[in-house]
Image (cartoon, rainbow, N blue to C red; front, side, top):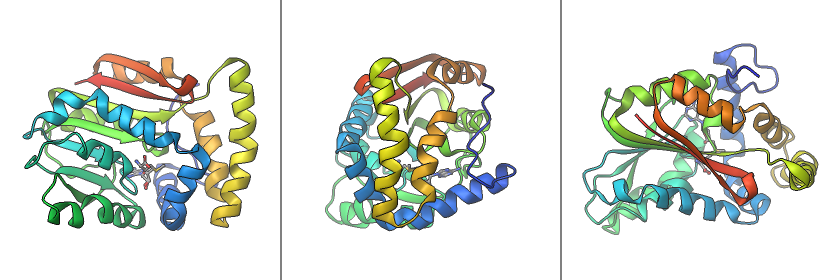
Length: 252
Ligand SMILES: C[S@@+](CC[C@H](N)C(=O)[O-])C[C@H]1O[C@@H](n2cnc3c(N)ncnc32)[C@H](O)[C@@H]1O
């Protein structure tokens, strides 16, 4: 396949795809955390923690400039914050859905700051047009957000622009495992999951979109090719939980 970007139902171009994604997350924001934990049987917590552990060295540096892009309700941000020392520069937590972001702030923002621990600063922004200076970040992490971008190459290019030379990128995403397990998982992912999602959030769209978007997302080899083509080095993919998810890593 030729990678382009997310194509929610009814979207005709990149602008309408981005708008549909944002509206979808605005709509499911109140139920997002509950659904996430139910549908993944809490395995998502392990994935966020494991991804954060992969970047423990850079996170331990109090001066490191860190961006969690597509931070949503902030669980990846919280896992990153656990690895920040006291007094560390705040993490930037960015998302273009205000409803998702405002839920995240309650976890990683005001209260964390009041408690005197490491905290994050929310930023309402589109991943494809980051309001950040070029070569300004040491680490960009994105958990389950990259797949929703309207243009994957443009996203990788924008991350490359804002990373410092030597800066690191981590993209945690779902994938489709092969073999027998893959077949069994596909039944859960394509049939059971949308039905549970529909029952809990009362809407059909978002949880039917999830398996479709994962099916349309480039397979690891292709994604690694896109990363290399965008100028990254040391591109690698580490499968998590039999390849249901996995962490892409690269260095700018
Ligand atoms: C599945 S949620 C993941 C949230 C969180 N990172 C997590 O692991 O639970 C995807 C998030 O990506 C955000 N998103 C999608 N496309 C985006 C874009 N172009 N710019 C900024 N945020 C975007 C959505 O608004 C949503 O909050």
